[in-house]
Length: 343
Ligand code: PHE
Image (cartoon, rainbow, N blue to C red):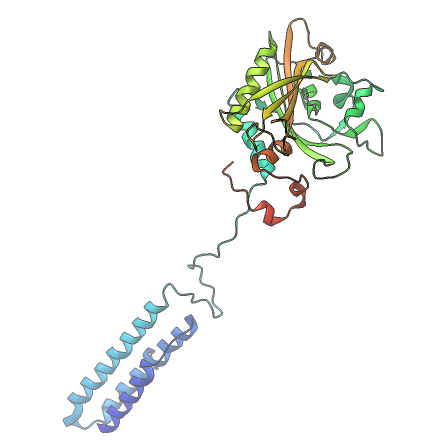
């Protein structure tokens, strides 16, 4: 009896001090102490050799040892829940997955989506077209015949294979494609990447993004154009924004204008961004030239329309006070991760 209780004491200490690091060790504990060939079972077998007068005490002792061991096992199991138990060979599919870092939208996309949403609310739909264009859609149809001096306004990348193919210099080419479809009224915006052969600097790049817009219907007027763009800048930059239109020249619009907004940085008092003028130019616009309508097979006596075009980089730079255009295409994650938006 003395021997038995010394043995039980010894195992109790061993069991009490056990910790398990993974599922395998937990299972090993169960097998070693509580399994069919485990220690509890085998020590119960000792009952046979206990003298009759001690049987009752021995039974109590061993029963208590069994309960003690089972309680310890329960404790180990519950401590293991919520802890990674798959450090061993077994994969535990019930564990929560590792959280992957989620990317952020590019600032150009954020601003582009915002612009699109504003014009969508006015009934414009999005039209897209190819980046590799033919000369006719990019220039000739837009009242820029060959050798027209205004072609120099946009330095062009031509494809080596054929000078008849080029990288579009503006998304006006998409407007031509849509006008040719002949369905009116036509109310579209054309977002997309465009290319110009310019030396790369903080203020210029050989590719950038535009949103151009076009509205063709009967009796569209310059007043409609102004009101549409005024609505746009108020939605984009807030109610306090001021605008002004300056006469300008584009071969595909007549009359043509450029629109300035009051400087977002200084509010119009003059700073380095607005070159002390209080105004920054954000887009070109005008009434679609009758020749452009005719080129697309549209009766210019019946239909009139307005068009406008803006650079998304420019607006993004103003919005976030970014001073260098090159940041947009360098893919520096430290720069890109700063822009969080639901758009
Ligand atoms: N296509 C012109 C550009 O890229 C912008 C523009 C569009 C101007 C429509 C007037 C009307 O510079």
